[in-house]
Length: 161
Length: 155
Image 1 (tube, rainbow over the protein chains, first blue to last red):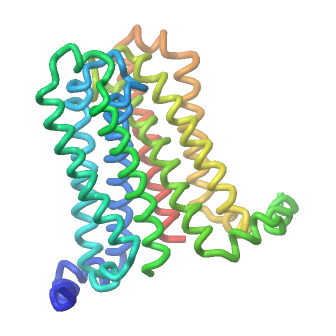
Image 2: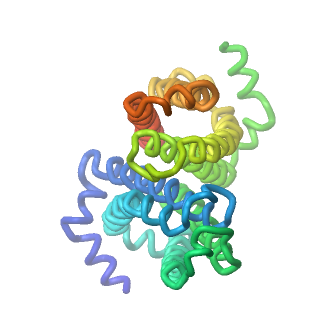
């Protein structure tokens, strides 16, 4: 694993984050902007899943309307995150907050897939009404997971550099 | 003003935060969560006003929860921000990027509060006004986000 990470750090892609004059700052800025955009928008789907906001709108409609915005944010976050990881792969790999962050991102991804499956099977009256327990649980987990991702991301920057 | 900053720097809070990287890191992380809530509220309200999301939903049904989220986010951001500001108050207050960040925050929050309280009925009667108010709001919040990133990275 360590050899793979060292090879990654030696690639041209990695040097953008590590060696260019403002590459690191620009990548971190894109990463934070992507995070604010993606999680700030996804939060509205989560709040609708919890039944606390936008309750007059169909859950599937809220998801459809906001998904392109939070996917745009996630794309910014993941691409800049990949470039930042490549630049500091060995240090990041050994960082506890980074490991927690990656595990929680995977859990959030699984939760999103489960939610997607639930929404597809949802009868129309549930889509428009109060969300059932599994949907509320999925919304609560999403808020929890993404809060942990933000916390670990910021804590990582204080313990890595 | 300098006396206020000197007093702030001499408080127990400033000393505790200033001497602990761990507390600073946790405050900074919580500050980012608060800021994400603020931005989440500001973005959805203005995206809706600009007609870019949920255009079938009544504006007020989006604006009210958005305002609540902005207020909750602001409370978290201001409390954690004050604790982060305290140890280096004199230095940070003279920083141009910090001043720009605070000015944009004040402008964006005031703009949003005024629109929510007074202007919604008038704005919703004209699609052009509503769209324009959304685009102005988006410009303000995005400028704030970019300035906040700039402050984190270059200072």
